[in-house]
Length: 461
Image 1: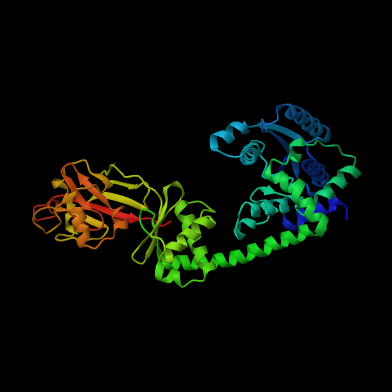
Image 2: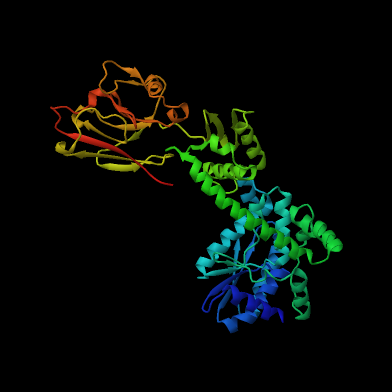
């Protein structure tokens, strides 16, 4: 089967391109993107889709970029393909974001392709990745210390991005270009071995192929697919167990039941810990092998706490393993009557409104997430803030004041929860230690005319 027929069959089988699509080709002038340009042009008439090509100047090789841009523009003009050029100052972007040039170029390239696709009304973006690229990526991630979840093979389709050449090997692309007498440009930086991926491509993989034959590519990809499938199965089990043994506090602390965690198989326990890390840091892939090992020492009793990146911590308190990300103290957010608003950093909303006196609960109100107080006894403004050292109030039904810390000790509130208790205050002091008690001087009585209801609504997710 001719290469264009194979690509067409691959596109049809996976539904990569549909009739009427407008496809943007990421075109650098190199062998892979040039072959992709010619092949899709051959197929476009049969599948009835339109093409546009985009060249991205990363401002890494100024002289070469001029030559590449001219070549790409002239070739597209000759083939009747719409052409667009974009540029991004990758070196500056890399410095600003502390990224390698490779990573910065990748991020900038994808961002520009998205922008160009919108402007050119392209609903698909075609990339020139092939089978060898997929294998290089697997080795690259392995050598950087990834777990099975990082071996996810390149996908033929990922959202609007498509990879029509993903089942084609580099040598087949080179043969196609040679047989069709198609010229292309070579980026000589691809042969420099000071870039990690280039070293794998030019030094490591040729040695592997020499000793194990060209079939190693298929073997490596099959291994990655099996590892990812098994990892997904374990992830499903781990997620179910995480849901079963975890609690999430309003401020986002994650609490794991140590008694249940200890009995898990090591592989399952590590995966549950990784889920907790990813959730706490709000970052896919968070939780390195070294961090998971350190947390396991808490579980085994050899450590009491572990400090992690960006100020996050994992500590043991009683029979709980507590994951907490750093948070700033809230100095005071206005609570306006008739308003409802979210509390930054919390899974909470506050509602504050006047209600008819006849529907209000009169008498003691202990705990809960909803209070009714005498509006006329409040000296506005109302604020929501964190507890402060030395805070005191007069708990409902008591005579005299009491330090909030002593009050919470009486209620046996653990230290990790005290850090995220909020109070509602007016200009005279604490009105409500949320979730626990109001100050006695704001209670409803027979003289009450206006009732203010403050409610905390817990948001999911």
